[in-house]
Length: 405
Length: 73
Image 1 (cartoon, chains in turn cyan, yellow):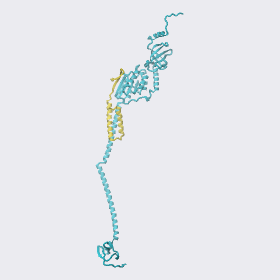
Image 2 (tube, chains in turn yellow, brown; image 1 turned 30 degrees about the vertical axis):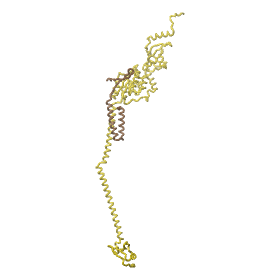
Image 3 (tube, chains in turn yellow, brown; image 1 turned 60 degrees about the horizontal axis):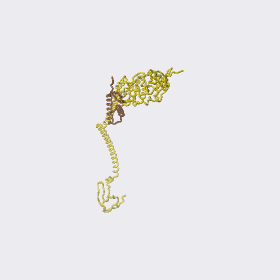
């Protein structure tokens, strides 16, 4: 059998020929539904996987420069929609899809991605209470990252203005769609370079797809790494996004976030007025205490009272004097009667009575020595004789001894 | 330097506590009272005069700037 050599390809030429047909445009920008398997996250940052359904499989590669389009972490077994262009890998001669974007296929897959990321970040400690930063009680300036349109910004501004007007720094932020996550991350980073005290990150309600940016890992990490505390207010009260778990405080709604961010002016005014009342009441009492103490002291030094006291003392002195004079009189009486008694006794032994009866006392001069015996005198001695009413001076003319008994 | 509202109210609270504990001389308590009343007035003024100012943060050519932001009523 003879083959007409109407043209022989080299392998390379053939591969290129196939490639030129396959990449001519018909299979560009195609969306394909399938399930991820054999996923390899290569060190280079590129991802390789097989997209399959029950009949077929398709080799896929997602180069790392498309990673920013990845809004969740693809996992083995996940049902996804991929967007890409058909390409031929010349080295192996296989066709493959160059993937530019992957989306979870259906709500169920979104929830799966949500749960996976939530568990991963929880394990890493991004939700732990001890990593939460405290919200300042009296912020001076509040950063608000949300969409420029929509009710969220309006609600936040209104509530803050009503409760406690304060300076606000608003940064327009994309909160839905493909560009939302990078925009939120950028807003958080920029606000961290300003002098605000707290950030409110807000978005109105929506479906899980609408809120998806707040379930993306980059957003979670930006919130976690924020130096400034963040209050998240995403969706409705029942919506819990991953951003809510990482945020320092989760508010059920944007209005609630505003209420958390600032104190209530009326409550503060009441508090201040109570403090003022306590101040005045306390001072009133303190002064009236002092006045009554002063009154007491003054009463003690009042002239009338002093006079009364002096009179009291005088009366007391009078009493003492009286008691004393009574005592003295009594003493005198006792002494007088004692004296009289002694006087009587003295009379009884006094020589005066004897002299009155006619006896006399003779003394020899000049020394008035008592003369008891003739032997006491000599002739010519001067004598003095004491009688009842005087003295008689005389001399001794003679003497004679006699025996009277 | 003007005192922040937070510092003012904290000081006011501590003054009221101190006065209520008593044991101060008349001079001390009068001085504290005067200071307290001044703080009450200051705090009230601050609250009354608080105004909301909203600015918009704009990034332009790698530069950050702010411009006043009009709030639609």
